[in-house]
Image (tube, rainbow, N blue to C red; front, side, top):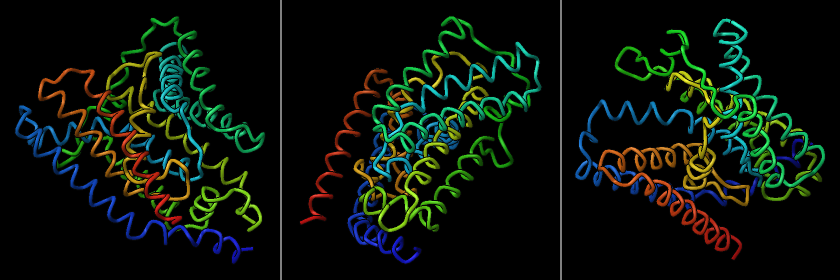
Length: 330
């Protein structure tokens, strides 16, 4: 069945060729414009130290965005990643402080919670056929509710050991933030998965037509299960990085992260309707979102403006994707 699978996925490159490159050039122009404006308007924006801080603050959202790229390519969505990050963070903190587990074991608890949440989403979406928007909207509330109930809404886990704090606050030789290699490794993994494997071709084919993918012999349920489990695993890993960077874990950890991650993915050119997109586009979108948040803060703009402009970027990117899709069908 390999030949039908390749045939089903074959239209993807044709639809992401010239239009995809144009989108990425426009996004790169946006990044350059943001850099130029905030270098003028913001204090200490255009410095090596601030570049490191932008990279440091981008890792958690970047991990979520990379996983969401694969999810959205299938035509699905995962709104639960921010809530799952919060739940994984507090359970990791509890395992370390309340159960006195070594921090490495506690970190594995956090990642395991993320995988478990991904398995739940996968079972409901891939096995029971429930629409992913409904499933992940439900688990969005479920995971956050469990985290708030577990902590009473006020318990905050702190006093993490230096080994964990170094991951979030330390620097490697050359001044590189210690958590950045995790994002690089995840980016390489997802780029290879999406762009260089039959799994990636199958994921794109599902985004174009789930029924067509089934007739082509692609194991649709298994592919969907994989992307949702990977999304949960990245939420768990992001929880570890979050706790290491801030030195604390509480129930509201990761609030709003799903919005920023989805914005990075869609802004990077991945169609919200599925089938078209790229990992490198997502990374460019991540840079644009990160520069916006950092630049607004350093230029003393109102904190609410970051949310407003992120929403504007997301709506504009969805509209642009819709136009591209209609032109491709014409």
